[in-house]
Structures are given as C-alpha cells and as structure tokens.
Image (cartoon, rainbow, N blue to C red):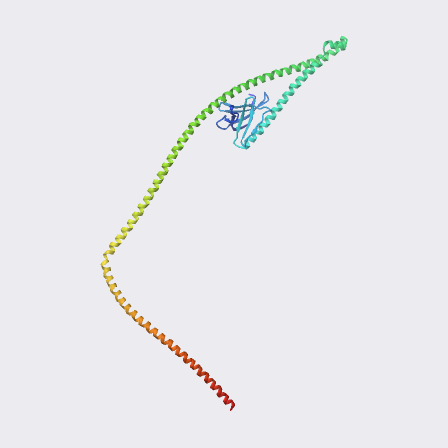
Length: 354
C-alpha cells in the first residue's frame, strides 16, 4: 500500500533464455505497461510490469544495476536477485531514452538511500562504542575520587550520561529490530516474487513450446496454402489464356462476318451490273468500231506526219545549202565592198592630186 507509481511507459518485455543465456524469450505477446514504483516505507524502487494477471517484471533497483542500450529501440538490465536479464523493446528511440534516464535517476536515489542507511548504522555503532568507553567502573571512580562525597558529585552526571546513551541504544536497537522485520518481509516478498517468476518462466517455456508447435502447424498450413495458391494461379493463367484465345476467335469471327457482309454487298452489285451487261456489250462494240476508225485515222495521220517530217528534213537540207551559198555570197560581197572602198580611196586621192 506504501508503493506509488512515479513513471509509466509501454514496451515489449523479454527475458534471457535461462538455458542458452543468449536468446531472448518474449514475456508478453504485445506491448504492456512498465512502471517505476517507489516504496515510501522501505525507501526502495522497483520496476513492475503485469500482463493480465501474470507478473512478468518485479525487479528491485539497486545501485549496482546498469541499464544498457543495445539498439535504437531496445535496452536491457540484469537482476541478480531474480537471476535473469530483462529486455524492453520500445516503439521509438525517444521512449527508450526517457526510460534509461529514469533508470539512472532511480539508481542514484537508491544509492543515496543506501548511503543514508549505512550512515545511520555507523552513527548508532559509534554512539554505542563511545558510551562503552566513557562509562566509568566503580573501582575506577573510587580510586580516582577517593571520598564518598567526591563519588557522589561525579556519579550524578555519569548516570545521566549513561541513561541518555542507553536510551539512544534502545532506540537504535528498536530501529534495527524494525529494519530486521522489514528485511525479513522484503526477503519473504522476494521469495514469493521469485516463486511467481519461476512459475511464470515455466508457463512461458510451456507457451514457447506451444507456440513452436502452432508455428510448425501454421508453417505447414502456409506451405499447403501456398501450393494451393500456385495451383490456382496456374489455373487462372490457363483460364486467362483460354479467354484470350476466345477473344481472338470472337474478333476473327467478327472480321469474317464483316468480310461476308462486304462480299454479299459486292455480289448484289455484280448482280445489278449483270443486268446491264448486254447494253454494255453493245456499247463496247460501238466503242470498238469507233476505236478502229480512230486507229485508221491515226494511221493516216502518222503517214502524213512521216511525209511532213520528210518534207521538213528536205527543207532543212535546202536551208543549210542556202545558208552555205549565202555565206559564200556574203564573203564575195565583202570582197567586192572592200574593192569598192579601195577604188573610192583611189578616186579620192586622184581628186586630191588634181
């Protein structure tokens, strides 16, 4: 009833495998509440976590404990009283950091509490030693003081001091007895916690075996379902191939139907044209006659063209001959003109001389 929570978080709880001391065994199926508790009566701190009705962590923090971060989201500490190592997996690095800082703070507080307790015990033992040394024996008092009056004068303060020291010793003895009772109660509590933890460990081991069996069954079932899925996928792929072939056949049928409709249309057109074939034949005969007449006319025209080409060749020949004659004539004419110029110049000279 004297315990109260001072910090609470959520994490996945693990314990070290007691057989291998290497592998982690999950102590909770899901994230559970992990809390720091402070016992005002005993001046102690504990980390407690409960999964349903089962206590999975009951660890009293001592100054010798150390919380170690092994990854960004996982930390662990060893509990020598529980003879195990606890591990916590957090959802984020921030939660892990807060838990580690609180662990260090509680560890320092536990160390201060232990130091204060030791100081009280040392103070009590020192007081008892001082009172034992300072208490004079009757023989010493008589030998030192000598007379009864002096003994009476010195006995009064000594008795008072002895009484005060005895009272202090009684108080220290009472506190020691109370502490012994507290330690006995705490030892009994630790034994009960150890028994509960052992039971929980056995239950977790049995649960692990059951989980292994379930995992093996689930793995076999998974393999069977995977094979079934592969078969269904193969069947689905075959069905898809059949669908594709059916689609292709449908398209081919549609194309053939379209071609058939086109052929029927062409056949209708041919039937219509067959009705006008006689008329076309007569027109063809008429056109053939005209074509023959045109060919005869064309032949005549070709003969005329050939005769015209012959005439043109002859006229070209005559033109070339005329050109030659004209050239020779022009040459003769140029000579005559030169002679005429020479004659004129001679006449001009004669006129000038006369």
